Image (tube, rainbow, N blue to C red; front, side, top):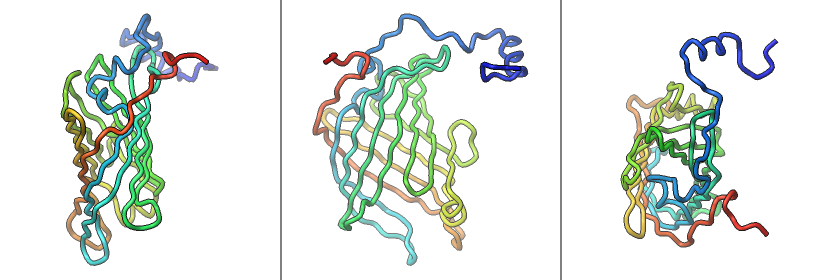
Length: 222
């Protein structure tokens, strides 16, 4: 009986390939803010106003919105030898209506060894995704993308969204400036009853209103 969560075939495969997939790295820097690569400028709290274009019964609607994003620094994460640095984020968006227009949580992760950027997305409409991209450590523009059906950068939706507003692709590009950052987001939807995919787009420029705190491992102890 296997008691470590690894099947016999998986264990044989890892041995046959001659790779150690279990041992964590030694002596890595636990200060996340020093190791976020292209994500470093995003840490902190940001506010701004953007423009959204989304599908409606008569076609499409474009409207402005107000946005607040908080990026909180987390401790380094390991998957065996893989080392990831990142931030936990919360997006809150309002328009002129009383109810929240959009709410989103997830993580941005940076893998220094490969230059990989990951963004996880969860929204309270019954949808999750993980988008992937690559960038140099000092990049100030980068893009992540998720595609329906991908096992490593994919999209999963509840039955209503899948049947009526199926997300085929999600692309997000971030451009960092001296005191602000701008994003452009394109979510490609297959709307029930319409022959062509719809590009649900968002664009915003946000400015930092609060600096980030340190990750828990290096925060001052009470």
